[in-house]
Image (cartoon, rainbow, N blue to C red; front, top):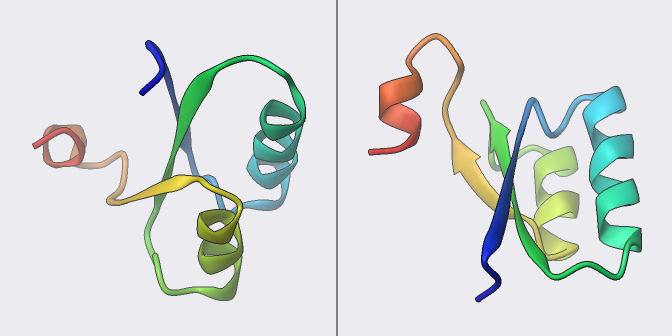
Length: 67
């Protein structure tokens, strides 16, 4: 596992998907976590197939994200 971990809130949104694609295209060694409300949506499943670790949750309850 890499030492750097990146959490992208709203990872399935249009802007954040572009950010995730840009991160994946770099040669850095890090793990990307995508925060999403719906881990079974087509956008989330596409991110997951790219190697993104999905976390279900929302920013209204941040303590639940890291539980």
